[in-house]
Length: 585
Image (cartoon, rainbow, N blue to C red; front, top):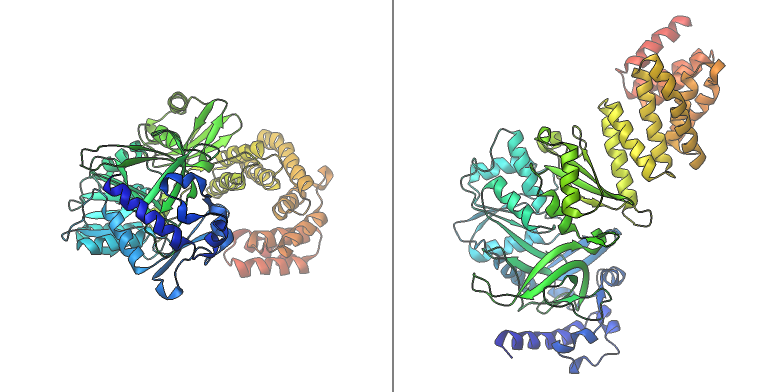
């Protein structure tokens, strides 16, 4: 047995003693003779799932006294239920050393700008530890806060001579795009920058190469989680080395009962050999990975890890199985590489939404052919209009960064589906507000096709039809009116009390001549219902005022219009109608 294996065996036996102090593992291991189990028998021990951690609560796998705790962190999964992790001072120091295994080789001359979020997540603190241990300075420019928006981060980098940036891969892309918007070239205008360290998101090789080209520096990836700390770090040759003295990473076949062959894809189960405060045994983190022995040019031996993404992001079409890494590699193979992208799973293929400031260089036909060829599944492509996918105005304003979503499932049985529909509706609403009525119509029609039983989808499609009717010529109005009526009727059939559908129905009843079915009294009922439901907007009060004018009730009309003007004093239509109604009194 080699020295490293003897050390791992010793740590594993100590772990089984230490871990039994936590309530979660007291219960999990009560029927196991852990004193007689070695690393070669790890498959006989139970897995720890994310659900186990959530059910155990914040203190469920705490294995030390609260007086020994230095820091608490937690991460949120797709359920919104947090999973907790605790750290002693020793754990934090060890986490910094695990980060230091990265090929960036921090030195006292470095000034590291940390762009990871500091609130509750772990990587920012471990990178800070790594910087302190190597003597490097730190600029704490946390993401997802208005205190350090993108322009300020770029200004700090330039003014202070930052040598290393550490953060989520997406932050590196958005900082580069912000630099472009501000007239800077990220590859030339930050001469002190020598390297980028990333973690927290999937990083395929093509994505790493792309970020390296944007900034003209090497990019080093790290793999871990808030629950475990940093499991693997990339060396200067682009190989992700597992920190084997601190972690056992098993790769399990689909059923989880046996190990996959070396180098084969499977599901990770991570055991934290060195963690003191909240150690984990065979933590099934739902990641798809491959692990195999390697002898690297950097001099390290042991195992290397390749991360393929989360199990929940895996997409299957017939015999084709696509992991998130496959999709990411395909997207980052495009020329130009998108500034923003999203893929939506449908029953008949994948729908890609792509955004680039060089979008004029693309054609949907060429993009569709390339992505179909790379992924071997049916593909449709949409080139995003305006700020529908990436709001560049937010990048140059004092707006906090947001958590990205790249892959959305549309199968009704998949929990992510409502999020995908919400995304379509959000983008459609933005286009509607920007007066891009035809583009919004197309997105809402897509939402209706994918979600035929969603009152939201039908109601917003009716809104797009309504705007097109307002601005169209007579023939277009005549063609669109039946479509508007059909969508409103469908929305109300699905949900008779849907506020926005009632609002659209009120607008239809108000603006249709009475001989063709208009009914201002019924319209007023709909608008009052919307107000009762909290839709307290000036436009609704104006519409209600118009109803009262048609019903020859100037007193109520004035009251409604006054309410509109309280909410929006400069409302043009409210002022115009107020002049009319007061002139009639």
